[in-house]
Each structure stands twice: as structure tokens, then as C-alpha cells.
Image 1 (cartoon, protein in one colour):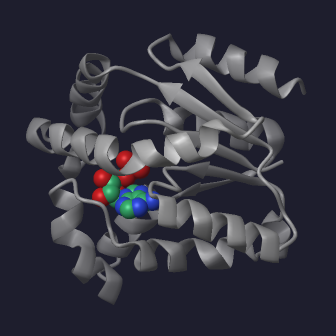
Image 2 (image 1 turned 180 degrees about the horizontal axis):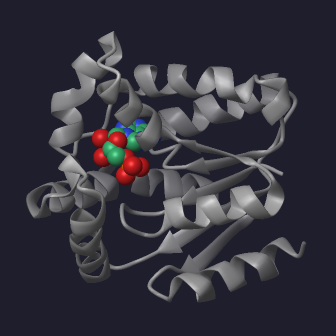
Amino acid sequence: MNIILFGPPGAGKGTQAKYLVKKLNNFQISTGELLRDEIKNNTEIGKIITEDMNNGKFINDEIVNNLIENIIFDPNKKSRLIFDGYPRSISQAKNLDLLLANSNQKIDFIFFLNVNKETIIERIEKRKILEHRTDDATNTILKRYDTYMQTTKPVLEFYSKNPNFKEIDGSEKIDQITRKIDILLNV
Ligand code: AMP
């Protein structure tokens, strides 16, 4: 089963992705984590993206699209993918459709974790203390939210027509969200 977790930064996509990975024995594709690894490993891509990442800006589609391509075509991971933080633009959504079609796969569910700005700021303030992410400064959080609203909202409209699109109240507790996902998956 391939699942897209969709929602603003701090909506709990990463937490639910990790739950689904365990439950379904799937693999998480977190473009945020892949990009942070590039920076940590000081790769050529890492050097190019550091400034934009720290400023809460989106990384260009070509870089992100290239990062996920090998994972999608990995036969061990076929139809066992949990997308966390991808796609984030219409161009990425169209690219994903193409890659999945070319590898004979489909999207089974799109879970939209819907959360308001106040809850997100509260949550990321907490995460800042726990995880020390350099892009979690309050200013950056607000920029990331605004970037999300501008660029990702059209993706929401793109997917909301899909019969497998399910909106979930992301301001609820982690366990409650997990329970709702379980019910929708019916597995
Ligand atoms: P995340 O861990 O998903 O919150 O992503 C952290 C940061 O990585 C974002 O603020 C962007 O700078 C970058 N990023 C992650 N995923 C994408 C994506 N699909 N497209 C562009 N930039 C991304």
C-alpha cells in the first residue's frame, strides 16, 4: 500500500509515518530527512540547499524529484511507501504520478492532517527543544507555514478530488489521529 501524508509543517506527518511504517512494514520517504542527510553528509546537494533549508524555503523540484526516484523504483519497496512531506508542489505531484505509473504503482490513500497555525506554532516550539532542528526557529516556522500555504495548497486542491483523499483533524492527540487512520485503512 502507498500512502501520502499531507499537511503543514508540525501537523504530525512524521509521527504518523513512523507508525504506518511499523504497522504495514512499509518504508518512509521523508524528503525533509533526505535533504537534512545531504547537509549532514556535506554533499554537493547539501551545500546548495543549506541556506534555503535554514530559511524555511522550498528546495527546487528537480533536486527533490531526483532524491525520491531511486526509492520509488526500488523493487523491495514497491507498493510499500509512506510519503511524508512529498509532494509539496503541483510539479512534484505530477512527477509522482508519472513515477508511480512508470513503476506500475498507485496511491492508495492520501491523508490530509489539517491543523491551524496556532497549534502548529505551539507544537514546533516544543519540537525545537526536543530535536534541535535549525529550521525550527519561530521566524522560520512562520515562513515555513506561509510557504506551505502558498505552494502546497494547490496540491491539496489537486488531490482533494481523488476518492482516496481523507481529511483528518490533525489538532487531535497523536493516538486519536492514529486511531482514525486505522479505521480508514481498515486493516
Ligand atoms: P520537513 O522535514 O518535511 O518539515 O521539511 C523540512 C524542509 O525541507 C522544508 O522546510 C523544505 O525546506 C525542505 N523540503 C522538504 N520536503 C520538500 C519538498 N517536497 N519540496 C521542497 N522542499 C522540501
